[in-house]
Image (tube, rainbow, N blue to C red):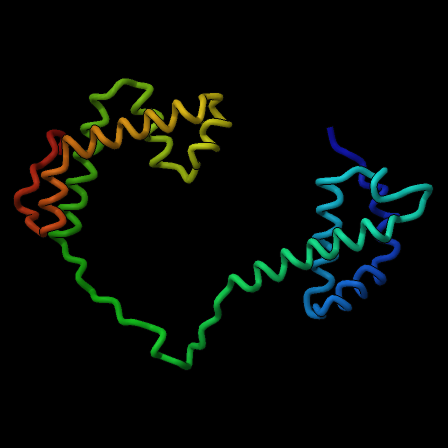
Length: 188
């Protein structure tokens, strides 16, 4: 059921005031964006009763919401490290060592893993495929499947150890570039 956002109209009536508050915090370029983020946060995380009382907006609540959004903006901005494209000493030339033999060997290893997984129980195979082939974390898989986090973790750990034990020699051959020593999968 959708919540009504009409109470945000009352908050947005003072939009210029909210933008001015953010600008007074020191951000001019993204002040509008921060205020918009504050509106979204209010809608998502709070109730109208906390923000609007008798048709009047709680300025203290808005100030702290804007301050929080501004601090989140600063934290995100500080995490981004900008490099100048004019200064070449930041860039390293990557070696082009990708060979056909290496790609074929890697493909063989992947096929061997798939082949090994086909011998597993359905539950182990499906969980491993779900974790490997999607961008879902263990927690997200647990939430979507209603399987406990611990069960998924233990299953994946057991399966990883099984693959490692069965294919360790093949992987060592791959790492040491002995591609011809990697056995071919049974299915091609």
